[in-house]
Image (tube, rainbow, N blue to C red; front, side, top):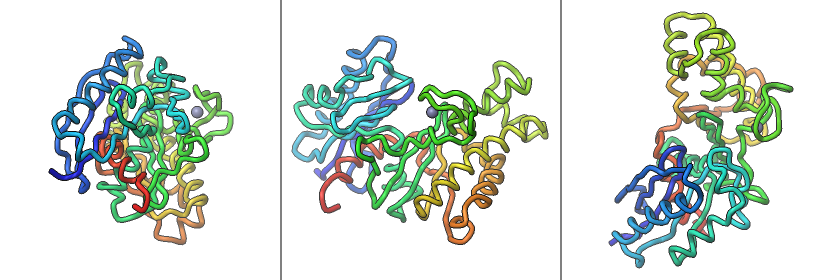
Length: 307
Ligand SMILES: [Zn+2]
């Protein structure tokens, strides 16, 4: 039996746990629905049981470690989710230590967007580089910074909250307290909000707007242009600050890449000398929904000294 690790990804509607070997081969996966409305105890119980099911199958002897990706602002020092719009019942609860206690081992807690970026670095679009930044465009915008092969965490573990970079001064209000966060102007939610403002329908999806744009609807085209410019502005800032070789765009919205990427890249080019004068790449992520699961599983190895 080869060495393996366990990754757990706590998503918006379900949780998944997987056993993955050192080469990135998934050995086993369990997934289940989590009833967030049933409260903290039910969620923690489901997380522990999913991990336990995988561990029982492969044994403790060859287990390299356990990594967990969760949404929200994570304080890594104490293993606590400080702020989480999706799962409020987990806020300010010592989730890392509680799960560790129930499993009688230590676990590594990480923000889900950071974990997804790490997964892409390990076996996805970023496997040929050591430094990358990933933006995941969904209902919000998650971000992860991988520097020298590891998640860049900052002093409290809250680095990489790229969705809350200001893209529009005095723009739309955000739950974080700021106005004009890029996630209020460049996410799938923002696409739908703009569609409503422009009278394209009340119950439309981002895909509906995409289809309208492809059919030549000028308002729908304008929405993707506006959204792409917001992302491009943030990308230019990131390129200027980090000078990394690779920036990845992930999330369901990348299905509309052909509509928003030209505006995004034009904005990045316009605002970044570094982008214009180097071979900086902006590309689509490759692992889709699996990125966070692989990244969580990679945490025990990426945190090992000497790797
Ligand atoms: Zn914000």
